[in-house]
Each structure stands twice: as structure tokens, then as C-alpha cells.
Length: 265
Image 1 (cartoon, helix red, strand yellow):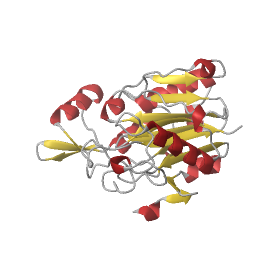
Image 2: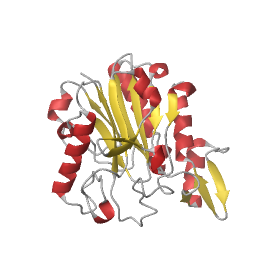
Image 3: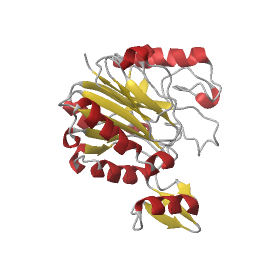
């Protein structure tokens, strides 16, 4: 499936033509190709939690940063906890930012990349070309249930004056419903929160297949985004585990790829 991936200075990635066409930001959904990490973390891993070498991750940041003209030493990547908290970075708070537990981050500060790490969960990148504000959200089933993407849109609206109808969203590589089997308890949790008629679930025996991309598309539209401003550039991370880290496919022993966006100076 590598043919779907583009390469820049050896770094494999996917990107949204919709975001590229808007101008004003640099972004990418990085793949697992082009780094120096070894073993199960091969090769472009950005996450220390699994046991990868810190020096290798720093080298990965340097290689990816050089390819995209981004200083990843300034990367703001919250400590992800599968919730719906949003970190808001403005000119004041970005100077004092420390690791915060959250699953989305938004900013209007030029030159500061924001991002999230995934290995099956859905990465969503947001950009308001009018107010020059951007964001990144991490949506697994828990974050989807608690509307992390809608919360990120609300934060952009409240703090930066963004109009949801101006915001562009891009959905990146994640586990697709072909591979994302969840328990009946997960379906019941969604049913209790959102009522019946959930189009992003399909039954598979005693379990359900969940389309988290479809669920978050519905959430983004409910938050005020135009359907035509939501781009899906994803592939299934589990099916394409040779190109993207997949927690389920690889039995939990794997790295995490970075999806990032940065408002240009």
C-alpha cells in the first residue's frame, strides 16, 4: 500500500489536498517510514512509552523536522488519555506549556507545531484559514463517544473567534470498520449517549464493527463544519500495518506515528 504514501526526504506521509489548498499551514499524517528506530518501533516512532530509545526518537524528530521545515523541539503533543479535554495555546500560554493530559490541542501561534500520536485511533487535523488557527485531535472510541472533535471546534470558536463553517478538517490513517471490532458494551455506551440509529456501527456476530471516521465526521458536521470541508485521506492502519503502526494488529507492542499541523509564520 506504500503507493498511497508520499515521500519527502525519505519520510513517508499522507496529506490533505484540501488543507494544502487552503495555504497558511504545514501538515502531515506521518507514516512509520523514514526514521531510525528499530524492532517493533521501526522506524519513524515518536512515542517513548513503549520502550524505544529516547535518542532514536530525537533523531526521528530531527529527520522529519528537516523534511517539512518544522522545528519539532517546539512540538506541543498533549499526554493523551482517551478523553475530550482540549489544550488551548495562545501567545501567553505557549510560553509556559508543560505536559498536560488532553486529547486535542488548538493554537493560533505561528511556528508552533501541534500534534497527536496514534496507532489505530483517528487523527483529525483542523484549520481555520480566516482566523489562522489550527488544531489536532486524537479520537479512539472513548474520545469519539465524548465528542473530542466537537470540543476542539468549540475551543477554536470560543478562543480564536473561528466560525465552524470556515474550518477545514482532515481525517488521517486509523483502524477502519473492516478491522475495528468492539464489544456490545461499547455499542450500548454510544446508544445511551446518542440514542439509536447509529449508522457508524454494523453487527458482527455478538460484537460490532465501529467506523470511528464516520462517527467523527457526523460529530464535526454537528459542530458546524460543512460536509465539503471534511476530507478523508485515510487508509486502514490495521490492514496497512507495514506502513502505519497498529496497536491491534501488532498485539500492543508497537510505536506511534505523529500527525501534526503548524500555522506558518
